[in-house]
Image 1: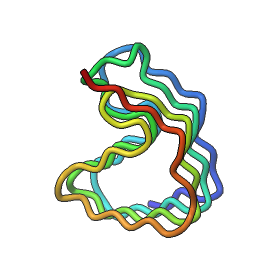
Image 2: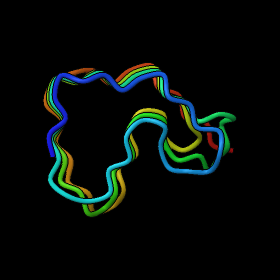
Image 3: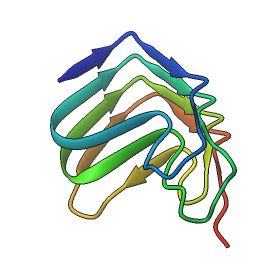
Length: 102
């Protein structure tokens, strides 16, 4: 799957789940020249997984020239990478993400 020149923003999750931005469970994925920002898991429970991108362990993901910023959740604000996932990040910016665990 290819996600290219896209914006994923301003999503809010208020009930249990994994991600308010992208939840990638399996496959070979390319995210290219995208903006993933201002996604929130509210309220920020310690077990609220991820605001930006949740990457499951069966995933091969390449992220090129993408901005991941201003996302909030309990466990991972910007990116949560599960053990076993294969992730390559080329360029872009990951900044101003907030994770709060108790």
